[in-house]
Length: 225
Image (tube, rainbow, N blue to C red; front, side, top):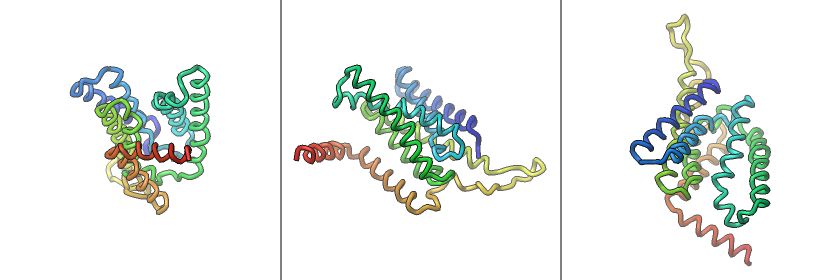
């Protein structure tokens, strides 16, 4: 398995490449390209949310517990307002919930090199990345979604490259970890089915945005009723 520094470098390279293309071809501003770079970098680390070691997991959730609430703040402020007291409560609760509650649940439920080291998980992360930036317009949301997806793929490819060693410096030897990254599912049927189902739901939201409006209306009716 490739180390944390290699994955971080791979994610940064991926993010920088896509951000550069967006600057050159799409006319993105430096701030917009910076967001794409960050999305691509995080994508390069996301498969390690099932990591056996604490460093990648800790860094990932520290980043996500700050970035995700910041991205969603504009939507949240429609319901809670923009007062200082709402901001304090919103960001503090979001940080604690993501960094401690969600992180601990994932630690308990995931197995290293399981479904989170797979191609469908990369598609899932790319779809979530798209939705998180959807309020910024189609070009930016698509670029960020692609950056997250390719970042995950870079991570998986680096792991597969590291699944080979060389005996006597010449003879390639396949390690037991070979094939555990670039795969379409895990040994757990339940976790595989869950990721596939979640991925389908995410992409339905992307191609049929009216579903979100329908769900919101349904929730309003339920609470009013």
